[in-house]
Length: 314
Image 1 (cartoon, helix red, strand yellow):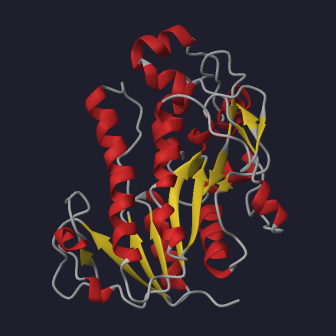
Image 2: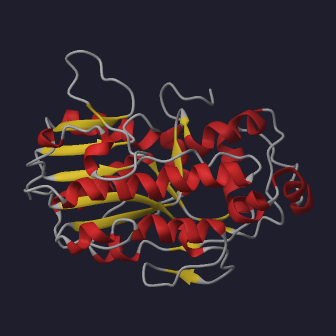
């Protein structure tokens, strides 16, 4: 199947964006980045201001350079890093995801030749805290700030779908990668033997390796039958306690010090319940129905791959 030769990419400097750029380049495919600072002379990057209001011309973007592109991948968004969610931070997170998606869609839908597919980032936070419930792409959204954010995030691309563009929101689980994402935040504690489960550890964690994210995007780009939301998670889910034990075992460290739920709530407020203690038992039903084969289907395989040559855990 043909891979699209011209791809517009926002959020290219992030963990997933960087990996995608490298993968596309290795395949000999050209990607053009949308950036919010002045590109270097000779760069193929395109400047835009997604926070401008009004018409697409207010975005200060050279629309002519986007005409004829076959695909767009939108990964922009403020980091949901650990920390207390103040009202100001929640607003920044919302704007960085919802408003930028609306801005990009406004551009794409007014092109004479819009892309055939738009891949947008989303998250398993869409489902909220659902305990033991098994969740697929057909499950309804949950409650709380993260769920409301993900719903609005995905709905921001509705106009593209109405324009005839194939829209695929990827609901990412916890991304496991060397040198970035969740593991970088966890390693300092685990390497000193101070890591442990969060709360009672019974909450389900949906996760995905970075190489498998890249392979999922490649598949979506080339397979026109894939449309609508896709759970970008590995098929073998684990509880937080299982994740903790596996990570500690691979690092050859103990994992004896648990973080009680009340301590997490005191330190992080709303974010503790929404992101650290929430249980999301999400399955990649649409990928499995499409016979997608995961390179890292198990947590043990994903962590070993992340900590292979040149890893941060050595």
